[in-house]
Length: 311
Ligand SMILES: [Zn+2]
Image (cartoon, rainbow, N blue to C red; front, side):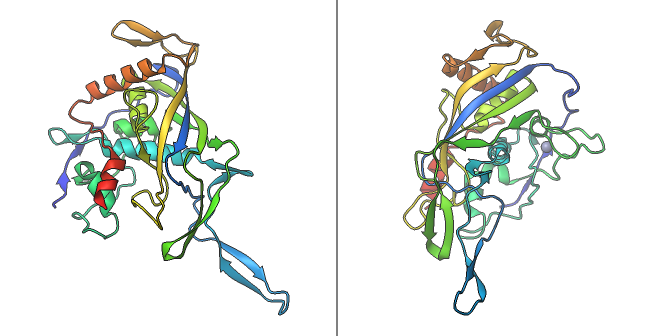
């Protein structure tokens, strides 16, 4: 398939020097629906074995560790940000030859990979987006305008409007996995929960709605199953499934510096307040507003369902 050249819609980024629009935070959880491995950036792990008889040391391949902060297993905020951002980049599609998001990693595509070749599952899931030639990613270092997603998540020369804490679990222990192709890694089992927060500033309601859509959340505070971490594109590895999670919103807080959250003349949340009870209603209003604002340009993909059908 031929890559299709599209134009990325770019504008001057919103003002970062003062508070305007929505300012606050979302407390959220990530619950594993399968095994999950999130790496620490390390590609290969070794342990040193000392031979007491010969006095020599040798190296033996070790389990790839799960990411940790201090002594605790955790999902780094940067991984959560990357997961949500790339889901948004890939959910946008062009309308009349124009698209709202660049691809920040800027990976060019030369035709669809054949089945079994590197990246083919990724391509199949996100075909509507990855077939688009979006050109170079946004770069604000010389003051050039940026796309919608770079305005929210930042890019070269531009700070992000959203901040992601590390996500920690309670009493989480990693389990060593000996997998096919001699893969050795530490993974957490299904039904493990991690908790963290996402801070935001100077967002419009539809942009806050986009953050939620990027978490796989639409009609309620609990999101649909989405892919995360290593081995997520495989249905099974050594009889186990990896990389299925769901996000859930636990609380939304508006700073006293925020504008009220107001939709169609109705105030849903006041500055300086927090919400735990009416989350379904608030989440649904925000995501519907985003879907309406970007109608015909945003496609919700049930990525886990697609991956299961690819096998
Ligand atoms: Zn961009």
